[in-house]
Length: 362
Image 1: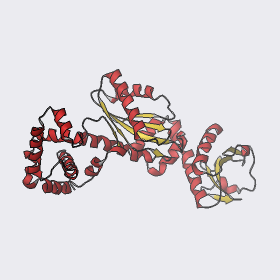
Image 2 (image 1 turned 45 degrees about the vertical axis):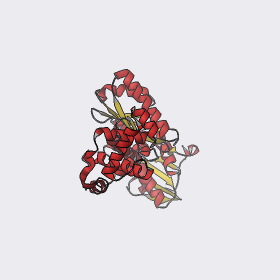
Image 3 (image 1 turned 180 degrees about the vertical axis):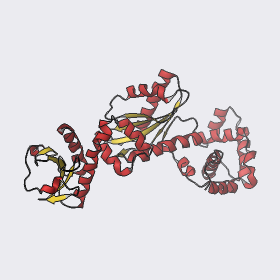
Image 4 (image 1 turned 90 degrees about the vertical axis):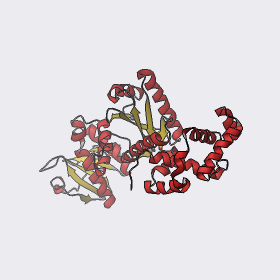
């Protein structure tokens, strides 16, 4: 292994642990160090068994451990400090260095690493070491965007998406199956979901222009630091798409931090939802609300409970609209002209839609 590779790993590790770290060879000369001026210096008073034992040593305020082969090891790492925190830093650095061959010598790239991370094929305890080896910035802010394609295969649009996001050190495009692609995007700051939604919409427009294909996108929350946080962001992106499919069929971009009351309903036990519906729709009379009436009340909600505005949008006489609203009151006991009753009915209709998708019962 080259000293340049050592120095790249050490530079990354220095930012992670916040301590001075380095590597010495068998002659006790520093070959890589977070403090550049120490490179080339020889460290004295080190015990000979340092390069033959696999346990850590504390000498003159530094923690050491050998690595790089059986018998007499060719190298040892060191971290300033002699407490448990320093020992953990040494252990992490050893894992990272031992993984260099695994991740780089075998052509193991960053996208493959992220895919296995999101699939759960990498132990959480190994993620930081692998990320360190591959050169991921430990302070970067990242987000998972799940792209679900319509007719086109993910393998057909993969290269196109990589072209849209060409910085291979910050943005990673990963295919999961024929319909799903995950974009792991490095972002500048936590400016909110609006900027990410605009990014998703522009990406969707580019795909539509290039491939004439329809797609939907789910956006997870942004995470900083350890790549372990991407697992949570990926799950949130999947949940966002699922909630969008149930409650917001016309929306193509769903952000996990803009799901509103739909998130609450999605996480409710189905048995509790059924109890709530029985309370609102006495004797199971919810089916007496025909499609025309449901469409009317939906437009009434969209018009902020304004009868005149709703009548105009539906090209209905005011009295006809009032008649339909009275019909809803007879069935549910809720007067949707009253804000509180309207809110209850709005939630009830969302719960009904949720149950129609046969959620897992518990």
